[in-house]
Image (cartoon, rainbow, N blue to C red; front, side, top):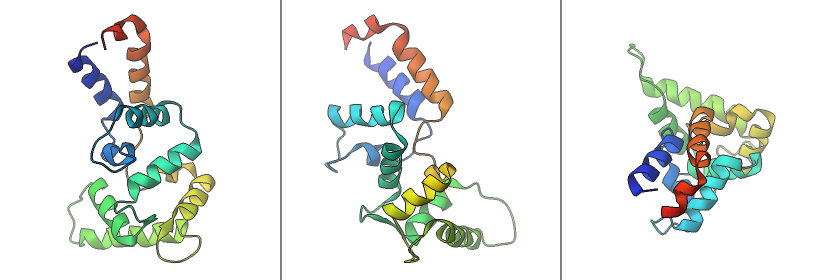
Length: 159
């Protein structure tokens, strides 16, 4: 398989995953090596809920301090919501959404989400896995990727 075909295949899987790089680059060296890439793909394609929660939390923890702060929530929600024309300040609506999210997910009431808070909320309601934006492939992309990869295993002999 040539580079162009592999790139197209990968793009199919990751088209809605804006923060893919941060989730895959486990050692934070600014590069995704082969081991990190394979590990990331394994989570995307066959990961358990636990693995997907850890991956999504790492993606959402923008500064890597082990918590998702109000500021991080605001930033991610602002970038993932469609702007609607109205007289109301759109930032106010996002601030309200952050407060609602904290009430739902912040189980220890410290004003930020730890992995424990996030995990508990996701186990109670799995739709919260991607509460701050898409970071996993949608089912259609997943199926398209697998259909291409597994249709002719001999095609990978050129890699």
